Length: 508
Image 1 (tube, rainbow, N blue to C red):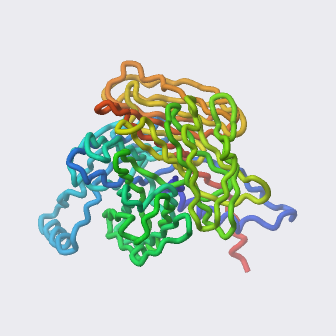
Image 2 (image 1 turned 90 degrees about the vertical axis):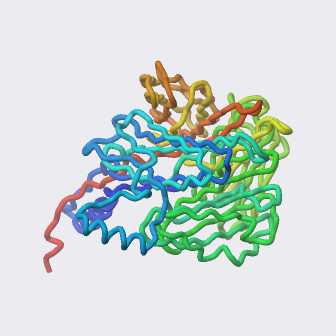
Image 3 (image 1 turned 180 degrees about the vertical axis):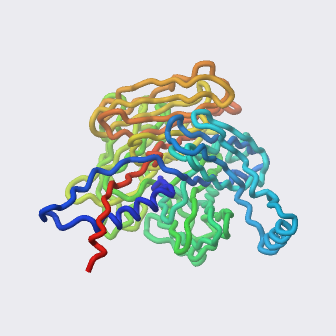
């Protein structure tokens, strides 16, 4: 996952930091004001982007939007997801002229929300079966902003790439890493770039295989028009057909949302979201207990090679897979290893950590398979940041969700809240203890009187850190289709430093 968006209050934070700095003298000087600890306040604005789910006449998509109850205060605010449908300049000019003449503003298709959240604490949903369903651009303000989450879940019921595709709508950013993509013939991997802003964004896409950078003449300077989305088939960006590829997306102008839609012939389909930012230690939580195959794909973006220890944090203790206890990752080259059925019937999470010496930053993701033959399905688990104070995931369904909690270090206490249902029911709260170095899989205690879907909110009460993921399973035609979403911190609060005013800095 990428860094979560800061609210408008971030501007206040930056201004306060500048004015406050001038009020602080050198350390040790007599009369030096003592800077007070920063306060954590709820954000006042959040942004989310959902990629286009379209491309199949057999696809059925559900959108779910949710903000935790009591997460913020102040004005009521709004939380809306609107279509990423750009308006042509000529049409915009004509509309503006008509609005001016009529003395009113007329709503266009892009102004009408697909989903509008009315109150915190209760999710809302919307469905579409349109093959050309657009990407969505979302904004939440006021009490709706802190912890706002949106989920896009698509069922493709038939075809070689049938499956359950789930993605937590993400924040716009300028830098993304996607280990685990492919340009092989059996794969149809599309990178979706969505621009939420009123100015065009310009993105660069780099591809790295096991031998290094893949030749590409068309991955540079890709223009993403204002408030629109551009899907690009990765195999058209290079002439090299490679099984395991790391995709690096950066922007030279503007910002985008990015996600890779994977369709693998005879194996299924799902979304691959971005890995956590490059770092020396990574955690990929939530490998299902019945996984029949797990493949690790990793990449070292720096100038140094990386040697990492591979550990599975299982139900009772961490252990290293036989014959794959370490992995050597050459600089700017994608490394991969087949861990097969590493969980052996127990839930688990994978941790990468430095073997010795300096920690070399890496990114990583897992390709997970359940079932076999024509009954198999795939999902992806990218490395993810800890839950921290709070994280959430929408679109949980009765008897279909499993929450995976992992404490790679100290034992942790975790509070899990199942929200009210979208169509009825009352929230439930339960606390779990996650032993250090282990993974705990729980079937969430569903809301009492549940009708519709519900959201899960996870909060670290003590100990930790804790990493989390949610597996959603839907049986279709005898196949256990599934998708896994990680739960990084929701960025619902931000540090606001306490400063004092000192007008003496204006004196000569």
